[in-house]
Amino acid sequence: MKLILLGAPGAGKGTQATRLADIYQIPHISTGDIFRANLKEETELGLKAKAYMDQGLLVPDELTIDLVMDRLSKDDCKNGYILDGFPRTLAQASALDALVDIDAAVDVEVPDENIVRRMAGRRVCPKCGEPYHTEYKVPAKEGICDRCGSELIIRKDDEPETVLKRLTVYHDQTAPLIGHYQQAGKLVAVDGTKSVEAVTEEITKALDK
Ligand code: AP5
Ligand code: MG
Image 1 (spheres, rainbow, N blue to C red):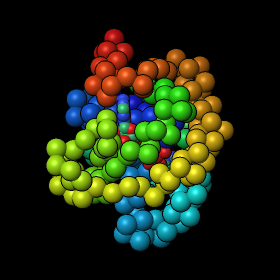
Image 2: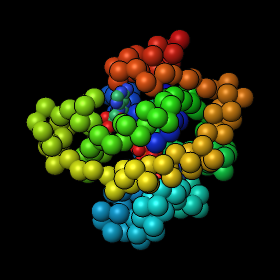
Image 3: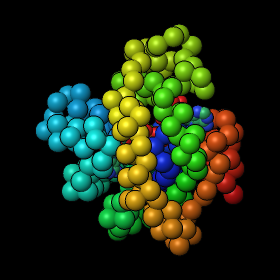
């Protein structure tokens, strides 16, 4: 199964992607996580990406497209994958269209007002990328990742001002992809305001049809 997860920042793409990766036993590929891992390692790519990410802007297509195409050529992608946060521009979508025929693009729909509240309570694992929330997804041990035991952090781009910028960028550059995948007959829209479990159920029901 080759899946794309679309949705605004904070819609729950990462949350759903880890659950779907477990269910369908395929890798979860998050461009945001790849950039953050590079930043942590202080690679050239990480340092270049940081300037954009800190401002809530998209990393340029020329730094992003090749990176994903290379990742998709790895052995573990043979039986499919879940793309979280890619594509995010029409140019990225065209590059992907030229390479693969995806099964579905799932749009996790959440209104902007809910997004701002969600982001304020988000905590993430810097090691495995698993997202948590102070109210909606509390880890078993406070401040510690359930999956890998690392100490949770607040993402730098979750400051309210940067979140608003990311939302503007999303509406300008990424939301047009919804029409792109609808035209291709690949769009699956789900209500992302429901509970984490209910959203997963809505997605798997639609995909299993
Ligand atoms: P990225 O890391 O992809 O960030 P994003 O798209 O802004 O999305 P988030 O990770 O913030 O949110 P999410 O939808 O994964 O939500 P989550 O599951 O965490 O990208 C970061 C930056 O990298 C970009 O700004 C850009 O600069 C760059 N970048 C990345 N990809 C790029 C690309 N392709 N091209 C160019 N640049 C790129 O959930 C949010 C919170 O809500 C959590 O606390 C969670 O616990 C909670 N939550 C989730 N679901 C629910 C629910 N159903 N009910 C209640 N709470 C919930
Ligand atoms: Mg994410």
